[in-house]
Length: 196
Image (cartoon, rainbow, N blue to C red; front, side, top):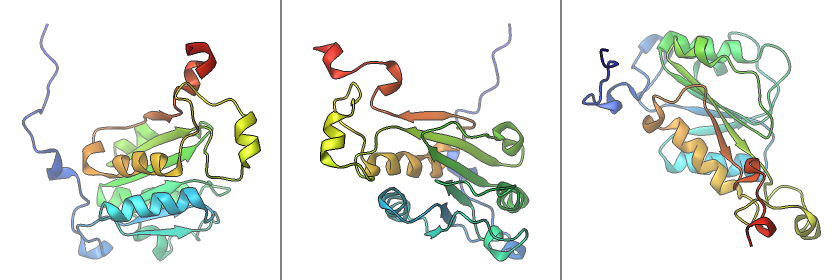
């Protein structure tokens, strides 16, 4: 039986950045947009992307009109709060014209994804699934009463943000349609009292 083809000797960085295209005003450095309200998680993701050298802005959940300049300027779309309607098409169409892009959902729920279709356009779509953020609106008393996962503490915004930055990076060029749990083992049904 023949071995599956591989390209392990290829340089993964060679296709890691969007190609220069004067018609699209794309530089070699990708640009990111976070869809969601300003808060600790959005701020942590913006800081992590900027630390990785990726210019990043925050936007309200309301999607801009189809074909606006905002779509053409975005290479990496981080979705905290998906807008109503067909919000994704304008962004991914512009990414597809450049043959490069990232759509990264950050959610406790499983969003609808078009990963296979987008991958054929050069756009990688993935999900960072988190649970039990410590830095949102919960009070200390609420956190003490909540069941924490096997790791024994809630996740921090910075920990979620670093996974997003990884998926936006050249190192994640072959990751498509993945659900990456940042849950401290919560999905395993394990809690500290069960491990003691």
